[in-house]
Amino acid sequence: MNEFGTEFLEFVEQYVIIVGLYNIAVYTPFMGKDMTGGNDMPFLNNFSLLDYIISITDIFLVWFVFYKLLQIIKGTKAVQLLRGILLIVVGRFASEIIGLNTLSYLLDNVMTWGVLAIIIIFQPELRRALEQLGRGRLFSRTNFQEENIQEQTIEAIVKSTTYMAKRRIGALLSIERETGLNDYIETGIRLDSRVSSELLINIFIPNTPLHDGAVILQNGTVAAAACYLPLSESPFVSKELGTRHRAALGISEVTDSITIVVSEETGSISLTKNGELYRNLSIDELQKMLENEMSINNKPSSSSIWNWRSRKDG
Image (tube, rainbow, N blue to C red; front, side, top):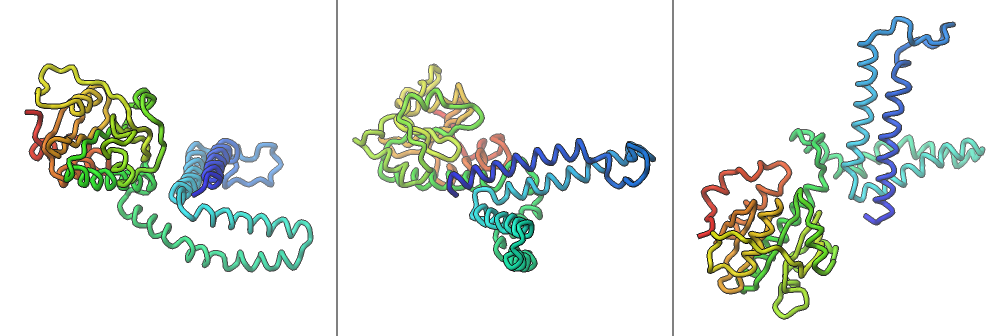
């Protein structure tokens, strides 16, 4: 989706929020009340707190459903279709006001059959929404786009790590989580590129301009390469570990990031998190750890896989 589409959908989301709050604040007291009486404030007649609560709940649920629907289609081709539908609706009312009877008639028929067309056009999005509703995840804080980004990031990391480990290509890859890594991103070369295994592999190819240093992933993008990470000062770090492992441990001691290391001497794969080093991981172990730590619906890092399938430093 292009930049205009993103800005358009963000504008619609903000509009929905503002209109929803306005309706709750202004129109709620009038819901279900007789407005034909002589009283200047007829909604106060026979008005109870329960009526007010029910009206607020009603408006809020309608607003929330519309907002979540916008979240579902955000980042998909449906945004462009939504813009087209809005243009048809606006054109329909504008043509009626101006007096363009033929155009108004045509657009009226388009809107009449538009419900069926919307079901057909938005079939992938509707099916995905129903699947998420069945899983009880439709109203979760995170949206589908975040899940897709994380899945793509994990896939790119695993694929590139597999390639580099087999060929003993040294790599240092840090993934930002809650704690920002902007201070370390500024020490490297800014990229802001979409994550892909091909890009990660090319960055770490020996004797290339960006291979020396760490790559930092941020919000599903390769934020920067050739970054400097702080070295661990722990006296318990094994002397056989090189600079990459010490840097991976160092960044995990001061942030909540996940860092993957590929040794150029042995091709072994390591991972650091919360000041702990997990060495000699297989590809399957690496993938499961990343899924446990990064996936939205999985449990946090206390999962048992960290305890019995990983081998700590030493």
